[in-house]
Amino acid sequence: MNRVLMLMFLCVPVVLWAQRPPIQEKQKELQERMVEVSLSEIQERLNLTEMQISQLRPVYKQYQKRVARLNMLNHKLFNRMNADTLSDEKAQTVLREYLDREHKLYVLNKQYMDNLLEILSPQQVIKLYQSDSDIKRKIRMEYLRRTGKPKR
Image (spheres, rainbow, N blue to C red):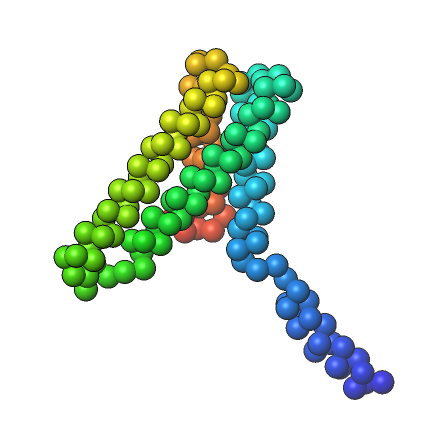
């Protein structure tokens, strides 16, 4: 009986640990929650109707997802290499890739603004940008408060 209890005591934590969601899934869930909180805050600050928020939600979510992906790719591009060891040719290739992504980000931002202007007034779009910036600042501050380390 003692052996069975001892075996269960040792195995249960291992089984539970093995079933935990991967870190990327946790990050994805966290990002989705932050987007939902942001949308809720934006709806309140801009006093949006249910129709407006239902039209805004997919546009906002898609934009946030695409921006996060482009930013992640640029982050990986620069942080996984040692610039001192690159040849001139390779460094130029990396810089072209970076500029290409920055251009994609510009096109994405323009498209996003055009989509927003189909749903919101120009003044509301400005308020949305202001609110979004404020919300992200608060999230960064809360992250720093909880972890005690700067977010990269």
